[in-house]
Length: 524
Image (cartoon, rainbow, N blue to C red; front, side):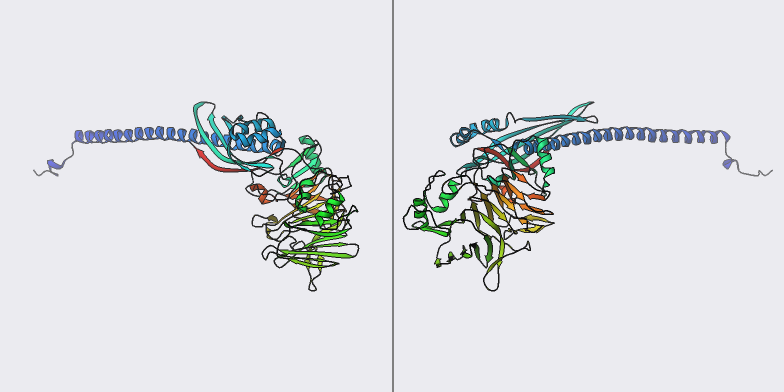
């Protein structure tokens, strides 16, 4: 009998059941291994993520410590380090032993300022910073020292539940001045003791603001003290302009002044007029006896022009540093010299109208009111000293100033302008009214690019609706804004320690920080 199928291909029930069990077992082993591997990988991944999270939080805490330490330091500088009186012996000590005298100088001026320590915590993170300052280099500028100091801020950051900490270090450079400082180094000074709250209220009530520049870590601010800053003696600048020795107020007799001006010997007072100082030493400055109706600054090609008008008469001084040529035209005649004068103008009287101008087609100098015409030649460092009040009637703009986004930059300019009202007769030393005023008829958008100092009589903005922009500095014994606005932009060169050569110096030794730069930022 024939079978329906071959016995060799007939499945065995026992074998089918065994194969399935083995397959299931193998699959169970494989998936169990995969699951264990995934569990292990997940555990490793979670540990790595936890480590990364802790590391990121430590980095954040350390970075916060360094940032907060730097901000705390700059805020302290802006509040306490803009200007501080120092003993004269501490300044002199820098000549003999700078390394030993420097920390003592800082302590005398600012108290126990260093090391400066800050500790804070936030949201489970903690950080602390420590700022140290050490002497780098020293430059003797005559009446004061320019100091480059090293700044080091160390910060450590940690977590409340974790013991490891992360370290960050900032290396920086500080610029300081010590001694009798050039006043343009001080952005704004008012002769009056004020608390921090009173300073803020003073700025707000008088419409005074500071325009910051990108990248500047130290912002300019108001310095207020009752004495020791504005000098009441213009003697050193007067002596330099007249090419005579140093004298005290009241010591410049009519006979000595006439001799310096090249007039015939006499005890009579010097006649009103404009005098170019000439002697065996060459050309000095310009001396004006009496009030001026108008003084106009202008540029004619490569020459600086200064025009003086009084009582219907006109004097014109034109000099070219590039050609070493000076022309001086007066009502009595003209003179030409193959020299340039010392750029100091002394006015023993009032200046009723001061401003920038231009030379017209007929060669006459007229005031300019467009706010764009430069009045001081690039390369000219001009100082104007007046015994009495100065009224500014038009823009005073420096050649070479570059404007960007509404902010003036003078880094590429070599022009400088200082206007100083001493409040004292330049010869006798007697007190007079003094002061600097923005005239009522001045442009409403007045641009002043200068360092302005009023030793007495204050600084006044007359009229209404004015928005005065000052690129430079202002120092006055009083201030009257009369509802007008004043915006101050610090000169770029002041942030590098460069100041006008013939600017007045502070009445007593002071310490001031003028720059702060970050050189490196390292995280460990």
